[in-house]
Picture 1 (spheres, one colour):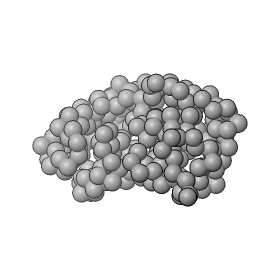
Picture 2 (spheres, helix red, strand yellow):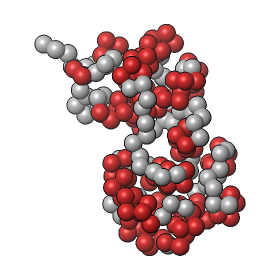
Picture 3 (cartoon, rainbow, N blue to C red):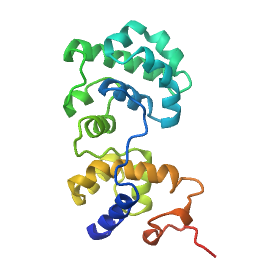
Length: 213
C-alpha cells in the first residue's frame, strides 16, 4: 500500500482535474436516489438512467411506488440486470419507508442498512450524495482502482474503505468515491485503459500500463 503522502498527491491531482465531481445517476430527491442506487448494482449508471427516465416521471415517493405496483415497476426496469429481485426489494423498502419513516429516507446508517436491498455501499452513497456526509462507498470501480494504484491492500470493500478513510481528510473523503468511479469509468478502464490520457500515469506501476513509444 502506498504512503499517505503519495495517496494525497494522487487525490490532489484528481481534485485539480475535477474539483466538484458528481454522481452520474439521475434523481429528484432522496427516495429516487435510493431507488437508482439499488438498481445500479451490477448495472451501469447509463442503463439505470435510461430505465428510470420514464419511471421517475410517474413515481418519486414510496407511496407512489406502492400504488404503481410491482408488475408496472418491472416493465420500467426490465432492461436492468436482476430486475425481478430489484423490483421486489424496491417494493419492500418502499413499504418499510411508509410504515416506519413516514415515507422519508432516514438519515441514519443503521436504519438505511435495514431496508430491503440496501447494504453498506448503498447506505454510503445516500449519506454522501444526499446528506453530504464524509462517507466512501466502495463499488467495483473503487475496489479495482484502489488495487491497481496500490491505494489499499484490502481484500473486501469494507477493508478498502477503512484503508482510505484512515489516510484521507474529510474534504477528500466526500469526493473520493466520485473521483475513483469516474476515473475507472472513463480513463482507467478495466479493458483498454486510456493510459496516455491518464493524469496520474507517473504514479502507475501496473504491468499493462501503456507508454508512448
